[in-house]
Image 1 (tube, helix red, strand yellow):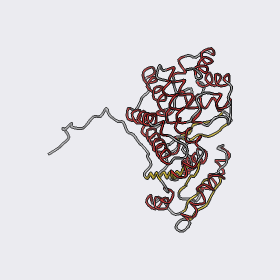
Image 2 (spheres, helix red, strand yellow; image 1 turned 45 degrees about the vertical axis):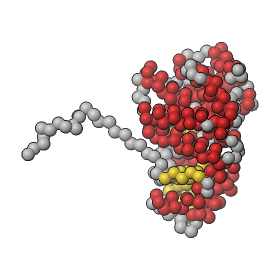
Image 3 (tube, helix red, strand yellow; image 1 turned 120 degrees about the vertical axis):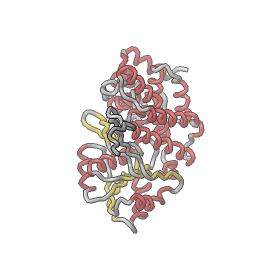
Length: 359
């Protein structure tokens, strides 16, 4: 009997496909670093490993990783410098011949591991020593170029090992910046939804829901985020991983990056080294929420409770520089529509910065 005439479950007009890459092993908790050899063996990614670390993070966790892996793995170490195209070439040369990569450190080191592993098609494991940004589990990386910070596509880590004892011991400023980066998801998805309504940009309801929920959980628990507390580190790291998963579902950084991130990148160009990425995103989130007509005071209160800055003055940045960053922001990644593309005058930008100091 022929089945040629049966049309059930056949829809020649539907040809969508989706490829999502997510971390396979995620270990978060006290002394989680001790689980690294087990994770490496579980992932079955080889015995030859290149360890990327910074000078300080080598002391914080890199030396311990060498002790843990030396009995069973062939390990080499590369001290990562600034994230530039030139430094990436050196890092790639060092990693040639390795079967997988481990990045231990903050955003610069993790992004180095991400970019090199992507370019060499090698798996990598993320070992954050601070919870300062949502890149610890995402498939995006930032690279400094002559034109400023560039966002690059990469693949997310195959494994994430987040030792809350190490992360809690880091300066609280880093943890607060990570919180601000997560809270910025609120306005990132508002921008994405606005682009969908005005320009027909495709959105992912699943990614939006996860991103919003992650920000909401952190907002509700803002009073519980305290310096050097492992419970606080646990909560923030889980949120950062969740945000990274939302980006993986979306296939882009859209669920976690909108006008507030454009403002952050513009501020880095005009006042380099003054603000951590997440800190600038937090201030940008207050402004973008005001422009969207949302409860910007609630955002500001949560950031204050966490210990994140809410004004340029707290970062040592003049108000006129922050206003100029607002005007420049729409030129950052112009293909990514945000509320800032609706039209912003210099007078309005100045007024928005003054608003940050109000009641």
